[in-house]
Image 1: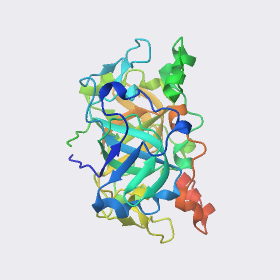
Image 2 (image 1 turned 90 degrees about the horizontal axis):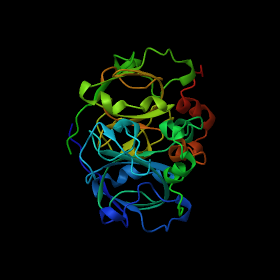
Image 3 (image 1 turned 120 degrees about the vertical axis):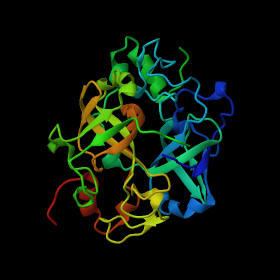
Length: 165
Length: 165
């Protein structure tokens, strides 16, 4: 299956060491640091996208930190070893990333969004609306993270809440 | 970008006319009609996935009903014309489908799930855990659907609730 970029994600994260492991708190975002530029051929496909509060971005994880493996140790999870499909790790068989972001505004082919934990110049594969009744599962859980001894601390990482300990 | 199937989604929908436009109500599912078979090479990547209530399936929309266009008319939306990225229509520039499903059980390389509105034998690209704090946006909206005159009726379609009118 061959896919092509439909645009590019821009973030302040040019180098490996600067990309957070999770998105930072959405409420604190500067609104002009994260934006997506869509190729001119696809701009008309954005019509009415601005009616949605949240959107999905699907992108190509084109600079994984590690080679693809069946098991991964999430860097914030205290050494636990879990299957790659039970994580959002970038080193997956098909390196497709998925993020939900707030859509702040659309100017022509440029979408201003909340923060995304990806490198600057990451290729976008698709954009979809996030629709509350389809996508917000309030009875979802945290899976294996809930079973770890330092669960409350790890949930801060998952939520991207800054903390000093 | 070249991606490869990691498995196959099985559904009761062998033919075009039988696939619903949205998943049917998850609560009413027979638990053995929808399942995903993962390739043997990737089975160990499923470790601990069963600790999650919900998962994302990313798949190749390999049998779109229509050619790719910038604008689409969702079949249930009364003729409204919106940009393809403001919909979940299959006829998109990169035909990657995204569904959130309940994960009922995992037996080896087979995942039993709630209903998915795709053809039988749809190729899977990726599986990711759905994590409540990351993915459940309770302040999300319905975008352009909210502005339509028959909004309440259309929301039944979006939610996949069967109805006779």
